Length: 491
Ligand code: ADP
Ligand code: MG
Ligand code: MG
Picture 1: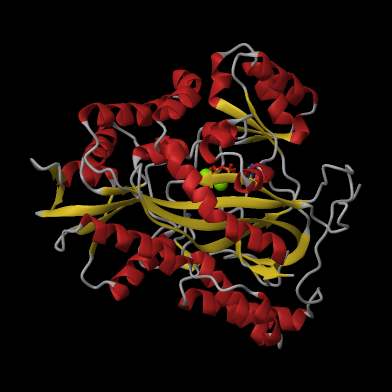
Picture 2: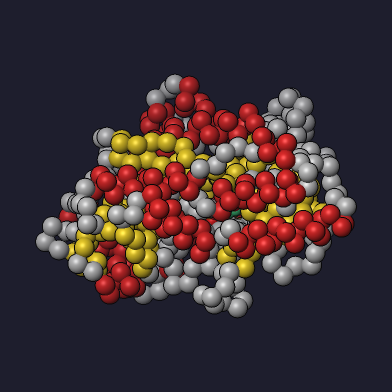
């Protein structure tokens, strides 16, 4: 069976001369509007290079896009409830904690903070639900009964920490609009949905700041030692600086937070003599970001404080792959959402998700994946890309871990097979014109939710981002150099 394919927004290939010309213009547009990243090979703070981008917007079915946008507040609320369900998180994570030191360290902080008494009951969730179109139809094995190259979309994961592309998402629409206009296709812009992700996400930070209610407080961005994806962070700062000039933003690494902050007797997190109202993590989601005990100490200090955290530690735990898998188990969604229509809408977005615990269903999942490895992705409790296992390696890994407790740190997920689309990817330093290649896309929908366990102050869908990668690549992280920025062209 050949893989399903979506039609491109304009006929391809483009004429060579036209292509070369428009890419030259587009690269300059990119550099001059922050479609950029720092150069990993020759890092310097004095320059930015273009971020890889797809020349023309990739098609995405309008009905499926609308469904995703409309479902986001439901997913926000679900995550909020999960994050506040102590018993559920304890039970869901207990086996993984035995073998996954990183998740266990996060969990320990959560336990300590609860024992001491939570100083800040309000959490700020800036979530991103990532989805892919599924080309296979569960009913017919090959062609969808709707006779479309896709059947529906399925959720890849939901991110609760450092959900990036609030700037790069919207600006991808702008650069592709510019390119379409240059190619004489300005009429097609009507198919490119508005994207206010940057202002929407920043409104989460400013609303949380106002709820904190201390006018001379500051906002703290927790950043990596080296931020390659710098545009996507700075534009948040620029946006807040414009809309809320009264709010001062600091950028600090966890190590600097260890050195420069303290808790006062009211448990305020103090930085340069002012309390921190909101802590926004753009780092802190992977083990390498905690090279010593100092970073863990810093994290604990922030969690103990009155600052509103994005995310609070329990939100980060709710974003683990293990929790996603548990939510797909029988009866679990009903426990959080009741039995109504919203519950079946959420159930529909799950593809097969299996626990690898040492019980009957775990054993069945191991056997199933060893038999048919290509059908699955093996995922540890990690974020940031590059951690999953695919294809034949799923079999090898499961045979190796079959009798080891290590396997409980993973979940097994059915591999989604998105429809192909042809396109050109423009990369820094690559030959121009690029070849016309087969691509697949992953759409991310942003959500903002602010609340305590019992009261929700704000819950909204705020925008989207599209990342596209070569059809035969397993993963598509843009900062990792695999994926490319893109935006949806609604059909
Ligand atoms: P991370 O938290 O590290 O981003 P993901 O679950 O998003 O982990 O996996 C990383 C990437 O792997 C995704 O962006 C997607 O390209 C690919 N991927 C993950 N799960 C699936 C799946 N079930 N089917 C197809 N591709 C997947
Ligand atoms: Mg993730
Ligand atoms: Mg991901």
